[in-house]
Length: 238
Image 1 (cartoon, rainbow, N blue to C red):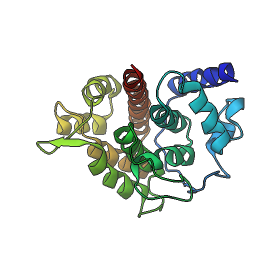
Image 2: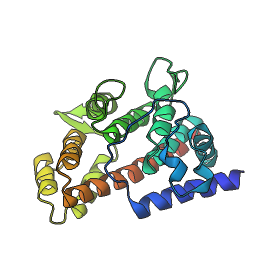
Image 3: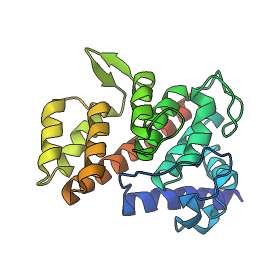
């Protein structure tokens, strides 16, 4: 079973990096076991049961490498790569919300992965997009979590992966005018609020070049975030 879990983790990473992570406008169910999860049809048979069975398998493939808290949040990142918004949300909510929920269960008030769980919250609700969820639209909720997840210095958001992400996205711009304007506005630092706004514009305009840019960015963002969580989780065990 452990071997299967490890193989599933590798398959999830490989598939996400191969196929990319498109900008989404996805309705969420806010249930412990969602009925319409994209994990059921993600192309990885072991994750087809979706819901708790899928997340437990992913956690099992990670927990030998990092602590339990980091494994759960890293599993949430893998779910986001594959479109499992509800599964990701169920995993991160106890690490980032101080009250119990029907979908996430009891809070983990001393979580070692609280900050990364809050970052995942930003991405979950960005992918929820224009749909109404817990507290208004997904984009509005994502913007709330921006203030919870990141340190702010001089009005700019900060996170350990941001410098690397900001450098990498330069290679994704191509001929996309809106993407180039975004980076010019950001300057040398990555500002996730501006990227949220760009994703909202991409869904509205359906411009192919902009949609492609908004696909490449979260693909790299989630890869970097996964690596960061795993590295931090490994260090916490030593």
